[in-house]
Length: 625
Image (cartoon, rainbow, N blue to C red; front, side):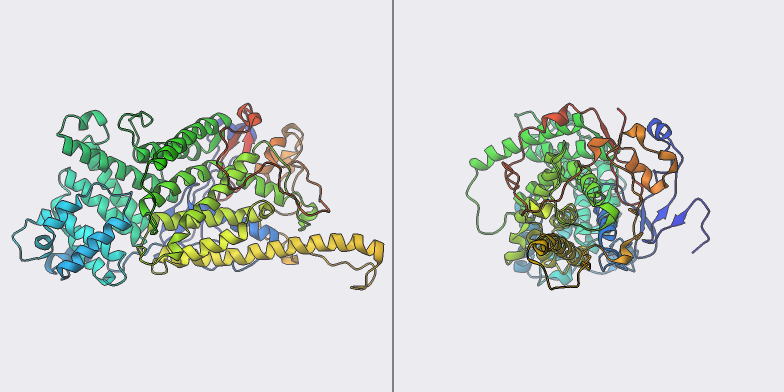
């Protein structure tokens, strides 16, 4: 590798950190220049890929740092592939342009082709509603027969539909790449010069195939081609669609919804800027679309929180109200829907998991802040007995994040139990992994005293393991298995600390023969944990007011924590010598509260999302209004 400049450093996880100068008034005021850093990870070819704060790997980095602080090195922390970005690109990625022009599409029987269209409908249920499969089936045989007189452009969509179906078919999966090469070749040859409805359709299908093939970065680039064509045709405007026939107007609306779902999914999961903007009033009841309204919520979370890298009580209250309205409408719609079948409805799973995802993304900064603060409450950075964190202003938000993760895992549980589930479901795999990381992080905040975290972390691992043929799911399952080990270790050491505390009291009453007098067991973290992470000893008094904190004498990696006020951390929690009790009135699996904590709505404090680490969002900084 070429010699790096002094301004650029390569950290232990293979991430390039390029400190920037202070650009905002808040940075200049707080003397926290350098918090803005490039967040880059390497793909399998060693090239750098940008990941933003909302990405799963950003959350993973947070969990790893917290785990290192609590327990030192482990398989989860020292994973040799921790800096890698799974992108299953082929070594001959450019050869399809030459080979597809001379190689015919794979030969399948009429019955097999029909089964692949069926699998396509199941795998993309709720995502792709812009393909008329009834019309497609009528000309499917002619489209797949390379000697038929059908025009090349008319083969593109059938090839891509069958390719996506083959991806999820355990018996015909080996045909997927052949159909995809033919479809993508014809799309590149005939559809790249002019914007058209077929161009949008084709590149949406190409995006879905690439997503299912664990090629997320490539999928993101191809989706931008569909978005450019979509804007050129005015599909983003409802008023434009009304000028066409009812059939084409409906097709345009369906294409817009599909593109929005894919764009927001890729933007959130990779931490990229949103490429589409909603111009409709998605709350209007006439021609209401639950998907469009849900996408508007996710767009607000990404643009008003993660792009601005800050969150205010007003933003949380506004988005929370929109989420409540959406949930009420969805509940009313479900009440009049047909009874559910035994097989999981993939379309419903897609929609519900995105709803829970909006809650987790909105409340994730509060969970991270509370867990980090809780880790630092123990004197001398040693693990002590379990103690449920004191209630705070943002308690509802912290619990909402964990609650939504658990509900997502429960929602996806049928995928690990039922037969005949499509082999590639990238959006649901991503949801399972994100929920597992959230549940894992909650362990280190001792929220296992409130929620059944271990059970659902194991269930999330089972869900990911059910998609073993998916490289992303397989890699995520490995990460979650390592996370389960360190979470179990954390619980065991907490229990050991509790036992030692009780044994000491019992010994004073009855005596003890387990070890010599004056010698006690140390259930704290191992010696090598000290200094292993960014939370070294010497952490400042986080309960002090901002004006009383000695900022000048602190190391750079502790500045973000020193700026917060008393609302930024838990109040000091005493150790209870009785079994932990469930908080009265708290139902971890009940509905999301209809209103936020009253004290939060009136709190003008601003939660800044400028983070010390390059990939991770480790500290939530509370600054001035």
